[in-house]
Length: 71
Image 1 (spheres, rainbow, N blue to C red):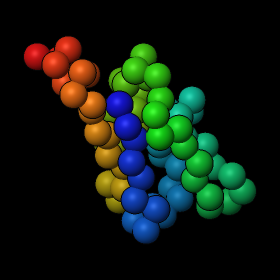
Image 2 (cartoon, one colour; image 1 turned 90 degrees about the vertical axis):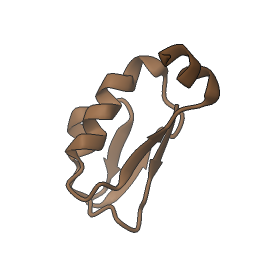
Image 3 (cartoon, helix red, strand yellow; image 1 turned 180 degrees about the horizontal axis):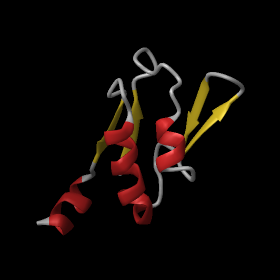
Image 4 (tube, rainbow, N blue to C red; image 1 turned 180 degrees about the vertical axis):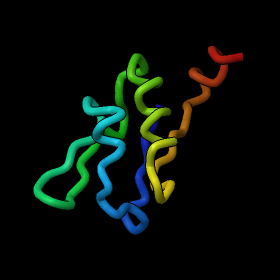
């Protein structure tokens, strides 16, 4: 799983930080830092963070192995 954040879209609302605090954090008032390759056990939290983002700046890309496991 790969997390992608479009930092041009991100407005620092920090909803992702509430939904997936192990993956997303704010540094200072507006700088988002995140784990772009988080543990797969965090998938549920990350999917909630994707949905919580008011500007839809977050997406998740699955690698081929993970997609095959989901089938």
